[in-house]
Amino acid sequence: MTLSRRTLLRASGGLAIALPLVSTGCSLSDRSTTTGKSLESAINLPAKYERALPIPKKLRPVRSDDTTDYFEIVQRAEQQEIVPGTTTSVWGYDGTFPGPTIESRSGRRTVVRHRNELPVPTVVHLHGARTSPEHDGYPIDLVLPAGGGGHGGHSHMAGGDISEGQRTYVYPMRQRASTLWYHDHRMDFTGPAVWRGLAGFHIVRDDEEEALGLPSGDREVPLMICDRAFESDGSFKYPARDDSLMGDPGVEEEYLDGVLGDVMLVNGAPWPVFEVAATTYRFRILNASNARRLELGLDPAPDDGFIQIGSDGGLLGSPVTHDSIPIAQAERFDVVIDFSGYDLGDEITMTNDAGDDDMAEVMRFRVVRKAPKPEPIPDTLADLRAYEELKEADAEVTRKFDFDQDGERDGMDMWTINGKLFDVDRIDAKPARDSVEIWELSSDPAHPIHLHQVPFKVLSRNKNDDEPLATDAGWKDTIDLKEGETARILVKFDSYPGKYVLHCHNLEHEDMAMMANFEIV
Image 1 (spheres, rainbow, N blue to C red):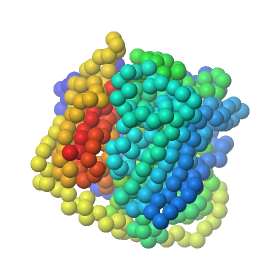
Image 2 (cartoon, rainbow, N blue to C red; image 1 turned 60 degrees about the vertical axis):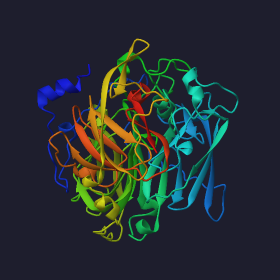
Image 3 (cartoon, rainbow, N blue to C red; image 1 turned 180 degrees about the vertical axis):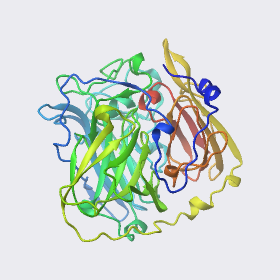
């Protein structure tokens, strides 16, 4: 049962603990709990630390010119061995889960043509990108199946920008180096589509980042962490109301709070092991789970723990160290781990203090080679004057968004924003282009909130204006709110005019109407 935010506020006063800039540990248990219900796999769970960590392939452009790199991706079903000894039908970009990694250059245009060979409509959203609205992946801008297919059984879908078989997305990439990711975003069906595999990394690079001498090549590793459950035949298990994903949307009512799996995957492999040299590595960490929060730790921990160098929106101004990292769905943390203090043969487990039993562990590192002494991480990473100069006094408007469960549709409880179900025709905020606003986001229960198109600066948490967390540093596009919490964020709407969405990134909450429109005018 979900307690209301009002009940929690009466009980606790909405208080939380302020943390210093340099973290010595940011316990998720002090902040929030994972919201959802766990599925039990009908297959024997795979053994831990027997499979090597896969690295998603890098997608090569099909052609390039003076201004643009062109890519092509086919969305299709393929069999993939995830649990050893069985195969799973994944819905993958180019048939793989995770999808191939796309790399872009800041300031150089990227064009991606997606062809849909799946049995359902799809939508592609590049999470964290700054692009015009027709290329952002609005939830009803459907790409219909190439072999023919409808709108997914919902007449309200017909109002979108519909493409037959394929769609070309144009990304100007006028943004800083950062870790983005692309995933399905079809209205009402994002949760099951991502669960079946429609997710991949998109990395943006620039000269500022490359001049730092950070770990690169084989020592720069993307980690897509998520949980899944499996049927006895190896297929993904998911409690959709309609397994075809063409009829009734959403999940069975007991999973309304979110769907949790009992197998931890990293880059599509269960509890993998990654062999490292005794030096520094850079890990781009993404929580791609539908509903599961993580609190990552290292056991035994290196002296510096996690050295955070970047957040959702790119590099921080300077490194921040953490003993543990709470990471909600869709958040990204760019971290360096120093393995030089370990001996050959040592094994280091990445733990999840927000999980129980098998879900309390994520993956393992094994030190197998010596290496020269690593170069230190620079004290200064990036020029964040735009971030530092953005002040609360610049805001002329304050808006409030309350994330709650007080709606109903077709006899089912639904998730709402300001008491309203998502409506494609309703605009809930119209910020002026280049204006600065304060948005107050209040949660009931815990919600990770994502704004499309515009990064933001976290001003405070809780009604008593507590300081942001150490892990709130830098430009963010997703913020995790604990139960009964209010966060104040500062947003400059210096992007393309048009209609975009904000929503909860617990994908079951999003599918069950916890989304709203804003329009930059």
